[in-house]
Structure formats: structure tokens, C-alpha cells
Image 1 (cartoon, rainbow, N blue to C red):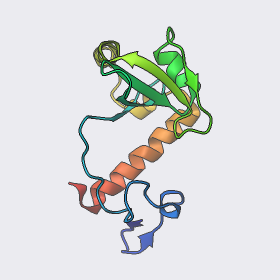
Image 2: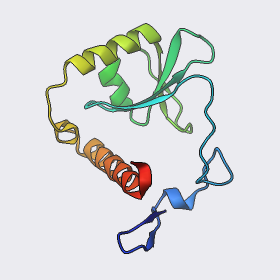
Image 3: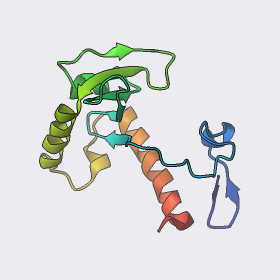
Length: 142
């Protein structure tokens, strides 16, 4: 839920229909856990990286679209789990993932990230992500 300039409450069409899976109160902050997870927006795709519970040196890099992992990790097997939160997963050594982030950072040549994304659906996803973050900022995030 967000407040508009007129002070009216605006419900998010998806987020306000489901409770937060981490807390009974969806507006309560999720407690910090040991470790780190990250969402990363690349021009080629959106991924979530989390610790591989079976190998301390690997990450599970997850995506909702197999093409995103294929573009970023063409030499790795992609495991498909259609019923999972993230249907596509690749198991990547942390060193390799870090090197990818370094290469991608060094290759930035745009002044507007969203405008650099050629995939229409991915661009729309990032635009909505940007709008949600702007609402967060306006609601007291600064």
C-alpha cells in the first residue's frame, strides 16, 4: 500500500493481495540473517544470488527466465524447477560470480540503465521496479 499525493491509500495490485511470507505483518521488516542475498539487474536479465547450502564456495544464481541465466552463464548447466519461486537455477562459484560483476561494472557505458535494456518485457519489469523504489523514496525512504 502507498499513499498518493492526495493522501489516498493506493493498493499495489499484486503485493497487497498476498501476505509477506516472512512475517505475519507485511509491513514489519524482515530480520537480518547471517549471510547475504542480492537481486541484480543486468541488461541481459534479472537474477537473485544466494548461498548454496551444500557448498560454501558456490552461489545459487536464480532467475525467472531461463534466457537470463543462459546469457550470463552460457557454460553452466541450468536446473529447471517450474514450481519453485525462481524456476531457473545455476550453481556458480563465488569467484566466477564476482568476476562477472567486475566485468559488467567495468563495461558500463550508458547514462540511463533502463534505456539500455532492449528486451521489452525486461524493460517493463525494471520500469515497475523503479516506480516502486520511487514510491518508497517519496514515502520517507530518504
